[in-house]
Length: 115
Length: 112
Image (cartoon, rainbow over all chains, first blue to last red; front, side, top):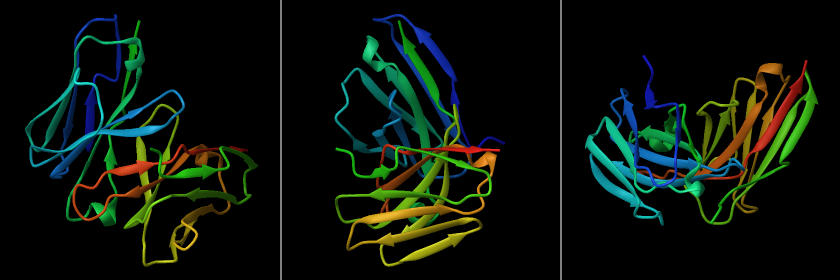
C-alpha cells in the first residue's frame, strides 16, 4: 500500500563502486523526482521526469544517471561513487495537473554511505 | 541556490504551547508549501498556500503568506509530543512538473 517506495532503505558501499536506487509509485502520478538531502538536512532537486521524459536536470555530476522505464518508476544509477555522494536520496511524485494543490508525495529515503 | 530560509533553526517548547516557524524566500512564487519530516523518514505534505491567498488553516495548522515581504509563517497550536519533527517550507511547484525548492528547515522539539 506504500504510495512511493524506494529500495534499498540503506546502502553502504565502497568508493569507486556503481550502485542503483529504485523508486516506484502507485499513485498514478505522471511526474517523479529525485532529491538529495545532505548532512545539514538541505534538500536539493536532482532530476524530474514527466511521463518518462526528462524535464529537470540540475547541475549534477554525470556519474548520476536517472532512468524512467515507465511513469510509475524512476531509478537512479550512480557510477564511481565518491565519499561526497553520501547522503539521503528521496524519490517523490506528483500529478502535474494537481501538484500545485496537493503537494508532492515523498518516499522514505535511501541512506547512502560511501566508505 | 537556496530559496527558502526558515527561522528559527531550532525550537524547543512544552506540550500545549504554540509553535511558530517562519520562512523567507527570494523570488516570485506560485505557491508555498510546508512539509514535515520525522527523524529518519520522508517528507509529508502539510499544507499549500497559493500566492493569491493570505491565510490558510488545516486542523491545528495555520499558515500565512505575505508576498510583499516574501515570507510565510506556520503556526502549530496546542502542540503535542508527536509534532516533534523538522518542518520545511518549499516554494515553486507551479502548474506543471515544477520543482520544489526547500529551505533548511526548523527542528521542532515538543517536550511532554
